[in-house]
Image (tube, rainbow over all chains, first blue to last red):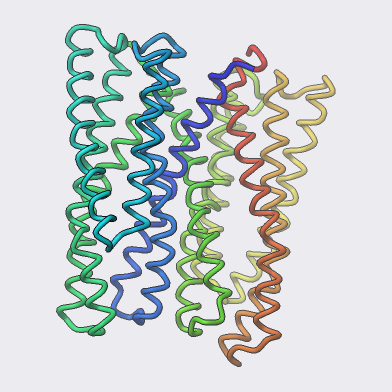
Length: 222
Length: 225
């Protein structure tokens, strides 16, 4: 069997656990800010949200090496052989850092991991944007324009992810305050505001993913 | 880029929201059967679960007309022209019905519709399986080998859905008791048992859906057409 068949499948399954899982996260966040739900109920829904939200985090990190795997198999990317192995190694380290940041949230070590994860994303956004723009202008490093556009959109999606992270940063402390002080107009607002502000970023991220999926399916000559 | 690409995207998205959304349902179900939570919390969790669960339900119904359109455009399916429109209308009507069952949950109308939905699903299964088998035997109506195999795998997922519905029926009754009479070991164990019985069917859906998707993405590489 052609290994490409397996990589295509993994590529799509990663989208399943990114985009498909995100809808549960989104709905749960709306239930958490509903004043008619008791603190215990909201804490339980927060648990569901926390569990499901781990999947898009992991899937988004694995998406890039798997995509590069497919691109090199089609001869569209210069990242092959040893370079591809290097990409996988870096992705594995990034995944470990990101998972550790989530699992040790609230500890000083968790904070350090989160900061490293943030810097990885900054660097990646810059590298992907430059590589995509160079490819669109000169036809290298990526030889097809649709792939270059996908790379650019991946950088866009990473930016949306950072937008979500920054707007949602206030939610955790607000939830802690809500659980300690109970429902007051202030604690409710503290929960509601980050959820409302995060919406545009989430919708932008989803749109980016759908357009990327279409580009991958159609692979148009642009 | 043409319409076929758009339908391919829709086909992938139905898979994405079918299996991806199921994750939230799966985890929330484990919290619903946790007796440590108050009945109110469990009721809200169940409501949240039921809302998310509608997404995979709609997707299962939507993926078929989208797939039928793709196959018709490839010229390998007899469901074409007027018949394809009929399939779309039937699927749209079925989705509206599924929404109504969810929306009117607990009413007599919803109960009647639920029964009708089950009969429809059994008829749908027969309509999927029989022509797929005759096609594999060489008597048509579907062209190619991969398409009838894919339809059979999809039928496997639909059958697992029916399995979930049947195994989950005692859960609803037990949950109703929990809400009116409070927690008791009998009620808790009935809910846990019902959930445990449904789990293999849930995993079955994921496996069937995944193999179906794999075949759809790779039929050219695997079957050469």
